[in-house]
Length: 342
Image 1 (tube, one colour):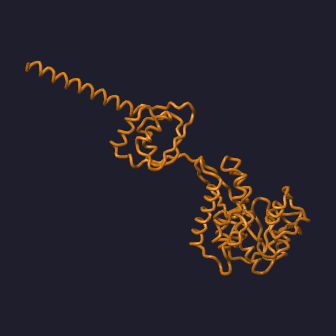
Image 2 (image 1 turned 180 degrees about the vertical axis):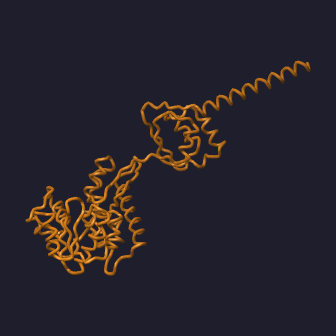
Image 3 (image 1 turned 180 degrees about the horizontal axis):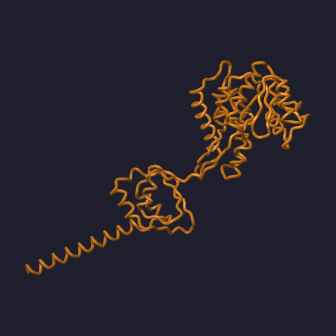
């Protein structure tokens, strides 16, 4: 009896040992084996804030990302990483093992779509660019541009968000709607402008709207970054001298508002009646004419110290700057046979 009992105990131990060995081998194999069984080439899985490991595992299994839930859950608990998973939408396109998936979820490798909004676009051009690339709806964004509550503290008299959609590369989730996209751009303007103002305080007699208006004009007039402070100095000097700014970019904006711009400015356009016509109105236009970037905002706040009152294009992206009309005419004759409008 004792010998039989001993044999039985040994047999049980051996069975348990084999079972544990097989289980360990299975567990290790599951952790190291890549898997992807989604019916599509890409699968999106959204993990909501506060989801527990069981819910996350079930979601990954249902989506064809995990073969089995147990190795994934056990690995999370063994490594004490269950609480480190980041909420968000994740994109899966190829086989991965539970360890690799865990690392992505811990790192917060959330899926975002990127879009670059260049400097100098008008608000309308900006939302057209966004909509054309699948970010928001044009029909929804057009009325949102008139929601000035977001900038009321900066520009109490603003009629729209022109000038306040900061140009930058943005990363939006697939579910970002039109309102979220536009508000994000406005908030980015606020953040960037506050940082710039910390370096460069407002000049005496200036407010935020005037800075943004001037920066938008600089943005449209200048191609070379090093010339922005110089063009800014021309505008500042003309404003101080009560001289009309005579900025072509403001005429173009007025024509765009009127729906008459075809890529050219005729001499007759210089006398068009519009508050944006800086040939016939001496001060700044009533609002921004585009969305300026950080460099143009800095230039508006910190112009170069010069006596320049004129500039004319060399037709290579740079300008000749002049202190008086005689010098300006010489530059015009040299570089612009048809004459200058600056």
